[in-house]
Length: 153
Ligand SMILES: CC(C)(COP(=O)(O)OP(=O)(O)OC[C@H]1O[C@@H](n2cnc3c(N)ncnc32)[C@H](O)[C@@H]1OP(=O)(O)O)[C@@H](O)C(=O)NCCC(=O)NCCS
Picture 1 (cartoon, rainbow, N blue to C red):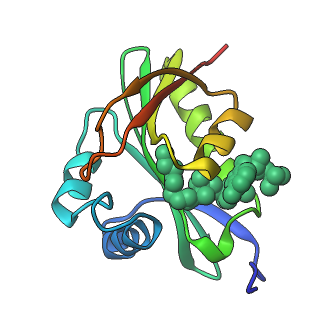
Picture 2 (cartoon, rainbow, N blue to C red):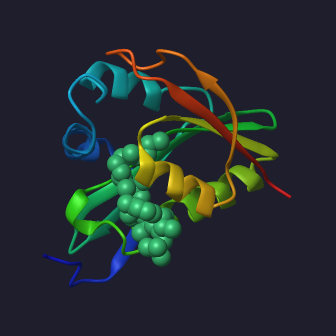
């Protein structure tokens, strides 16, 4: 299995990254759930939105997109290309996003994740996110989502 052979670097999103991020998102989710270019662009314009890129050898391999308003933060998506998973990339992205949200005054971060996405649920639980409820037929195609959240203290 190919693994990361260069160090991981986190950096800011730049406009030229958009297409690469769109392709990463398409690769990370099935077609009914992955964002269209228009959706991704709109999410990037949300109030308080912030996008952090993980790259290795100058190639984006993942990203996290968050937004916040007042004390409430939200993870819109976190995506790591499959062949680079379980190497700590998602954790690095999330830690940096949480640090920035906390610095902006956020006290609680929420997200939705598909109720059958076992790896994502394990990831969120490991990082202290707890299930607050279920949103029936939340995703296009009809899958349910868990609403999860974490208090930043
Ligand atoms: C969720 C996701 C971002 C995790 O990225 P990652 O780089 O693999 O995460 P990490 O390597 O930092 O994993 C941290 C921990 O999360 C848990 N975890 C991650 N993937 C897991 C899996 N497939 N099975 C079980 N636990 C898992 C483990 O506790 C892991 O620690 P460990 O490897 O020491 O056991 C990645 O799987 C992904 O992009 N999935 C597709 C998109 C998606 O579902 N995003 C979340 C939508 S809300």
